[in-house]
Length: 211
Image 1 (cartoon, helix red, strand yellow):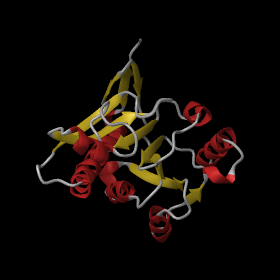
Image 2 (tube, rainbow, N blue to C red):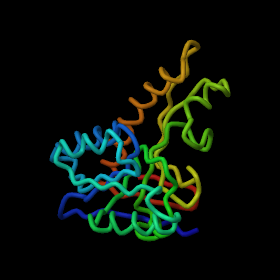
Image 3 (cartoon, rainbow, N blue to C red):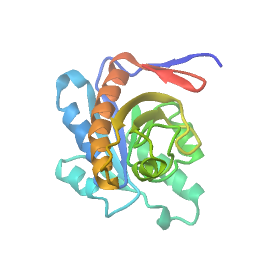
């Protein structure tokens, strides 16, 4: 496969849309980073699939534009996919960051923002896909857990990996303690990686990717 390279606008701040399903801790870290003018990015919209997501309330209190597109409000995934795409398109994003968004994005959405959607995941992929990365890592008895940032493709946590950070698993770890340490490393990696994407662009060559 031919190596593809991608860059973001250099004459204005990068327009970022963040997808969330819960508290939005990664969103908050990214929002904090955008307050630094050197970061050259701005969050123009926050979308959740749940109207109860704490991150939506936080975003509204911060004055960010928000939307909720719940799968349960639609007769099928195709209709939901279309609504997701239409909603995010209105924000005209340069980059879409899936940060704790617990739904697989549909084909129309992926086609609308090809290779410009990244997802942060709480395991060292390809190990422990899905929503229970820290739990599955503990059950497997691994000595290293961590977080992965990857470019989203149609599969579940299968896209080209941009960055990974490792977190040692302690003998007395619980799901809760390991999850919290991973979250800390994950937030730092997300901010650093998005900053690199804005400043330098990124590349994809088959299953490989980087900045």
